[in-house]
Length: 113
Image (cartoon, rainbow, N blue to C red):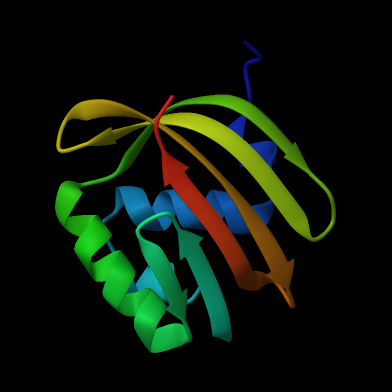
């Protein structure tokens, strides 16, 4: 697996990982556009308030990046695979962030190997 210097990755990804680690819902929400859409196998969150509701629940499991396993980006798209700690337990995570005007406009996120 590659080693990634998180600080040199897309600034939106860096801000998102920092906000999640800080368990700071306001910092998380600053990363999203008002018309953001979050797609997960558990459901779709459409609009900023629905995304806020989803992340309010997600932050209760104390998500922390353990290892970034794969990562690639373009100017407006980020694709990653990682190991996250959720409630202290490792979980394989993957997702895509589509960025518009410096914030997340569309996101996919999932867990599992």
